[in-house]
Image 1 (cartoon, rainbow over the protein chains, first blue to last red):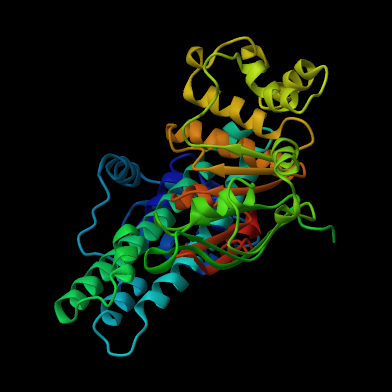
Image 2: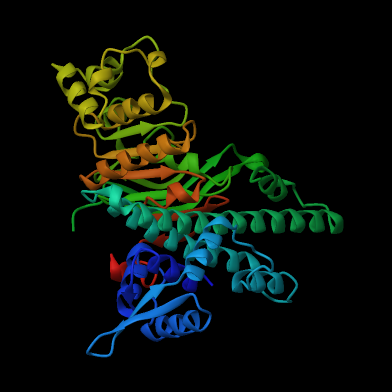
Amino acid sequence: MAIRHGLLALLDEGPAYGYQLKAAFEERTGGTWPLNIGQVYTTLARAERDGLVAQLDVAADGRVVYEITDAGRHEVARWFASPVRRDAPARDELTIKLAVAVTAPGVDVKALVQTQRSETMRTLQALTRLKIDAADRPDPESDTAWHLVLERLIFDAEAEARWLDHVEARLLRAAASTTSDRTPAPDGTDRANQGSAR
Amino acid sequence: MTAPVLELDDVTRIHGSGATAVHALRGVSLTVAAGELVAVMGPSGSGKSTLLNVAGGLDTVSAGAVRVEGTDLASLSRAALAAVRRRSAGYVFQDLNLIPTLTAVENVALPLELDGRRRVRSYALAALEEVGVADLADRYPDEMSGGQQQRVAIARALVGERRLVLADEPTGALDSETGEAVLALLRRRVDQGCAGVLVTHESRHAAWADRVVYLRDGCIVDSTAYDVSPGSLETVR
């Protein structure tokens, strides 16, 4: 629905043809979610079927100029006024992988967590670099939308890194209590280290 | 390829001895070149602060070598080591440890003055100018905000020709926006040719570094480098 509503909101600013909408959508979101042109036309065709947009004009080269209808305007207003609902958690490969890994025999979960942490950090580094570059641009005000998109992605990556720290801490705690249940630590040093690492 | 500003070569640091010995660092190797900012991450007790302390000559190694601009710190007399600390390496700490009875410019000038340099005030003023707080030169620490104090601390860490800045949670006492400004400043100084080591537990702060090193129980377990932007992000911008 994000693409449909995003395109509708752009059309609310004035008539446009498909390629213009694709370019405007990508410009506004910093190219984070590139659209393919077929997707744009399919979305527009469905919106037309639902009475949200109408064909205003067909250029000589066959390009169709779309405009928003009253129903479409109403839909855009409704979209901006309603919260985004997150009913079912999105299927997340990392969460699934870890959930399976903690009970699967023979998986080095600690290594898995660290491998992921480095990867997440690489993403965070790349995003931060983009943010620094954006701040160096002459007119940062005009890039507000791009900044906000970047910061959202930074918060997401940071949350993932925190969650990985949490997973590691929890697993260490669990391992420590299992060890102490089974055998007394030989000299106390290792467990003392683990304790102080918390 | 110029020589690295900081080199830790298979460094081990053991506190205490016998049964109670604690291995704070176990065979850590790390090089930091000019223009490079390296972040060190790890839980408390993983050896982050010890790493920073041996890098700056505040602590000695049990085995291995620490070289700052090619000089093995273990080869130096106490006086020569103190000189390295004044001339080559600068510190920024979490707790903004400026000297309360000295003004901003006097705080920044202090390492130069201890080094017997002349006309230190003009150097100190230039350093304050570079971090954007020249107008606060005559204020005392308690007349400045946390962010302003941290800028002064960075100026002090980098005054003179020092090329290595060692920062221990420099944003810890600051709100997130001010913290970000301090990181931007550190980043800029490194881009201008310093070498930097940043100890932090915040991923978003570590992400300002060129490389992130993970410490666990005194060992480097992993390290990342800035390489590619994620997918489509770089194509448009």
